[in-house]
Image 1 (cartoon, one colour):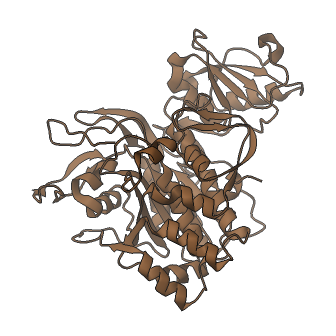
Image 2: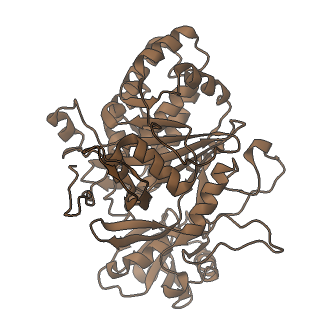
Length: 504
């Protein structure tokens, strides 16, 4: 994707087609750190010769204070396809021109005890402030300005990308890793492929994905199609749904690399390292020995110790001159998330430091409230029981009503609309109410969204046998509630752990 310029000299919004493969390659690199720990000085020497080092912190000042324990990485994915033939790109459904920008940014925080990791994906269209910097193209000094976060790399290189993320989050970045997709397919193939599961078929003609319901063993090409898919008819949320699928994929990669012995063979391990490390760049302070030492400490990290956190958003369509549609963060919610990360806290339970360990007898925390753009009170629903299980429709009705949705009538039998044995919950909606349906989808994660022209304002929820409950939702404009007596606020953002998204 070529970066376009506006009359103001700023890069315009890149084309809508986006790729998120760097996120998953970063997950593979993390897995490799685990399995290569303790292999000895020969591997240290080999790794030192493979890793390309850069200095993304050059010239940075006025940086945030370091975290109170723990280590924070910034992983960026660039849209570079240097060295890949046009024929190969077409085979992978990855044609088009590359852009000199970051396609993906992920903050990864490892707590001081090394038994928990938090991953936060930063939307590439986030509207943020660029600190004063030296323009990469002209070398001239440029003052503070605003724009989309993915353009920071274009305007000022790696240093501006780091400075922009630090300014937006107030989290100090300790290490930098830059990846591209050149080795994605070969790395998946080297570890023997990855099992992925889905309750419904997934088909995206643009990425080439055609996945049946159930569990499928993906090779490298299929894996690339899976992580890039964003035009699935049953998921109109686009990048939001893709992020959830990528979380599952990253967890599967980690489980595959660390739990099956795939990389126990030194010859096999060398092949994976050649594929992965041949396309990454790291900061000068991240030595091979440091990676291996870190891997040793992370040996006990399980999938339940990985938390994926979503930045709460105020709106996904904030129009800005010269930039087009941008993403605005919810100030209170995002500050709470990044404060917890900077203070080395468990982001799913910010009142407790993960370094203090977890009590086995502690009761599990309830689901965090999801911030939505359209308030439930502005949405009309009609619930149908699409199964033969008595009372399931009523259970969904009660849960949705408790969240404030306006109910058009009592729960009805699915036979009235020709459905009696549904497994997956289906949300039927008129495409004119595509913003409202996102709020309903947030309350019913995993439901299939089905557009129905002419349905009208009332959105229909057809409950399937897989329904387990309703997730709390609230309009993004509402501040996070506090506990009685002025206690710590409840999380104003969404989190999930690796053991919740892994394929069983």
